[in-house]
Amino acid sequence: MTDFYEPTERTTPTRSRERAAYDRALVHSILDETYVCHLGFVRDGAPVVLPTLYARAGDRLYVHGSTGSRPLRTAGTDTEAPGLPVCLTVTHVDGLVLARSAFHHSINYRSVVVHGTAHQVTDPEERRTALDALVDHVVPGRSSDSRPANAKELAATAVLRLDLEEVSAKIRTGGPDDDPEDAALPHWTGVAPVRKGYGTPIPADDLDPSVALPACLSAI
Amino acid sequence: MTDFYEPTERTTPTRSRERAAYDRALVHSILDETYVCHLGFVRDGAPVVLPTLYARAGDRLYVHGSTGSRPLRTAGTDTEAPGLPVCLTVTHVDGLVLARSAFHHSINYRSVVVHGTAHQVTDPEERRTALDALVDHVVPGRSSDSRPANAKELAATAVLRLDLEEVSAKIRTGGPDDDPEDAALPHWTGVAPVRKGYGTPIPADDLDPSVALPACLSAI
Image 1 (cartoon, chains in turn red, yellow):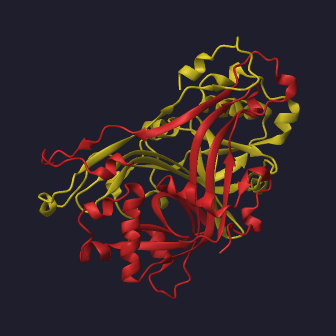
Image 2 (cartoon, one colour):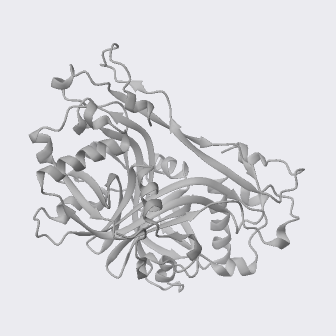
Image 3 (cartoon, chains in turn yellow, brown):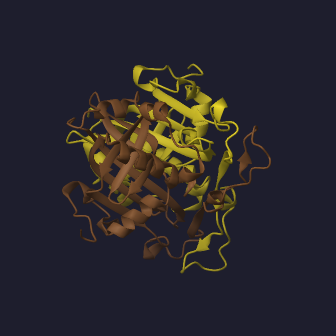
């Protein structure tokens, strides 16, 4: 395995090529920093984009959903099914870039776009590993601090696998790129960094007050 | 104009129907709270999902980009062009829902999915209004505190319009939905609220120190 994903025609941008990256470790770090992706697929010839949770295990992504949901039904349950062509995109917004000119306003961001075909996971062991990964990707360690899925829950849950093969990252960092002739304009220019985090956890109404906050929540 | 978007077959979810909403004011409030959407379109039969800025003006959304970018070229520049079928999705992650069972873990979120056909805006007045809206949607009031686009910049920028007609919101709020028989399990359960905000603005290297932070930045 090389350190880079091989660029393809559709992972090579037509513009701002300097922002594109194929470094495997960089792609993984962007994917691992959040847990909600936007999953695109084609239905009746038209595009559909839905937010959904995902997790990464090596060079494989997993998403899950009800066995009744449209993308999961479309992917087919048979191991021989052709699968579902998808585009899975993950985006971090890191800052607002205020330039002196309206035109050069921008966003600092890191995104990953994965093209491929999603297949339903049928192997029981891989399904369980994927479901644990989906919980742990949101709150590290939580899968071992909750009741595992029972047979009925497992039967109601479909898991899709998407291999990381045709992948690119796109990144913008740094300050504004104003034109030199705008340097004397009187407008403030710079970056407003985006901050993300979590507030104080809110216990469920029926939680026994003697149950302590789990260590995994202090890790997020 | 009614207070609700008319549900269609593709804006009616196949499951969790209680989470779907069509209230116009609610949809607008979700759209107005952020500025990055995920825009899906079909290219060579396969889905593509790209993050991009958007703005709302009434019941119309605008996105913009280089005239050389793929979705904007595909949409066509002619007012008679058939346009580009798109799905534009906006998602807020509001909290992590930790249940006692792995299965009932969830995310509190608010999302809007817009189906429709995007058309290039050719009217100069509407183009300028849209570009101002795109700046002001990120930092309210900033379009009047920066140099407006010149003719060359306007010529390099394409604007797409997407009417809000086939639209739905989907919302999950509140605590975990554990099964009653899990109530005595020893796992912590509740919600970790997601907090978003901005850090201290970082002036550009070449900013004259006498230029004060604009009021619009304190409004975000």
